[in-house]
Length: 238
Length: 305
Image 1 (cartoon, rainbow over the protein chains, first blue to last red):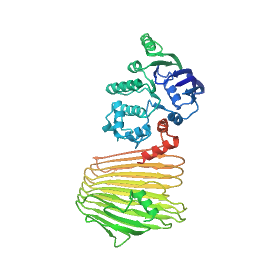
Image 2 (spheres, each protein chain N blue to C red):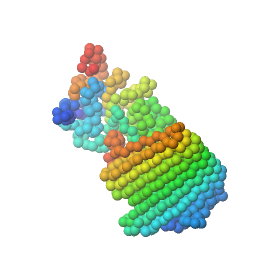
Image 3 (tube, each protein chain N blue to C red):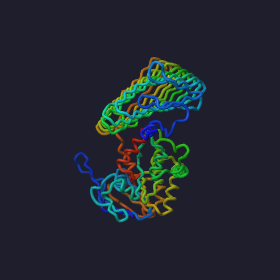
Image 4 (cartoon, chains in turn brown, blue):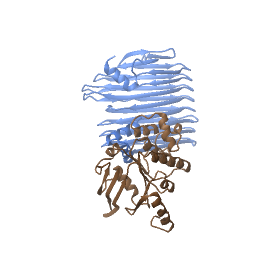
């Protein structure tokens, strides 16, 4: 179980203190699938980075299965079973897709397993396994490989920061199916930051983060209609 | 074979035993084993130290290993090796030099390699340089590589300096006739107070000659690297020069790619970049459970692979 307790994150912006997250509390039970949505600049990505340890909160604490992980490093959190897919994944010269999948998995992955993970994100294994994860890959390709690296890990909590960005419609359908399958197995918790209606609809819960706070959290049936009506009435989320 | 010898041969030439095919092993300035084959003849030079390696025309799928090891301190070894590759041949040449210097004197090996590659012939040349030893004596390697490529020949060179070489000055010159293609992949790592200079001049002299030069390097600690690759187009030709370096610690790197065209249909491009390891790369590997140090090692090893 993941618990965020009164998490705050302030930064210095030209001598002025700016609040990115203010007193955010959230709980994610094991096996649940939470979509975090909300307007751009509302603090969603920062929250994901804080859970992974890429950013350190300036207030509050993070509990993972009852352990306070607030001051733990990224590596320690990763080894406790937390995974994170970057919104803008880095590129590596000389590192192949097969290497990256094996590094993610923790041991050399056989070709058929690599193939399964790549198929889940709509990539043909044959074309990609030996390609370098470098600038020759398009934005959509690298994004899909990034998602596959998290799927190749045996994590208890997977965080995806806008996995749909830059992905074509066909691959997006594959991705939705993959998320559905992971969610159905109920043995992995998922947090997906997304603006996509179709991703929200397959989640268990939706949280709306705007202006650094959780403005709404509840089941999909409860929050989704609200979100739609707010959008339709020229709301804060535009 | 002594333990240190086999360790060095394994490191520089992936050799676990006496190689198959033609070979010449040079140890501390003297020949330590040689074999010719029906198609590949290795002979001593008559006028100076070194060997002539003659590959008969149409020789296919054969290899030549010519590793050099230095296990004594104070060795100053200069050797001239000429390769004559016959027309239509297709061979693998594995060279390399390993110095194990546990003394306080400088040990140096300067290999002057000349490649005469015949029409339609293809070679792949792999050269690894490596130094080790507990002494204070410097390990110095100053290779000179000259490549003369006849029409439609193909040459792929992988030149790697792994570690432990205190000072190196590499000089590579290539002259390409019509339709010849040269691919050079240079990989270099320096650490502590090591110095590495690499000069390269590629002359594209014939119609549709082409060349690709890729140089990747990592400079750590107080080490210094200078790259000066130069591509000259004297005909309708294509060339691409790419220098890419990772800088760490207090290292210094200079990268000065030069391109010149003496023909209006010469198409020559260069790219050069120096930068430290990207922070997002480190973060990504940390999110996979690697420590920062492990992440750094993975990034460097892949970059220089």
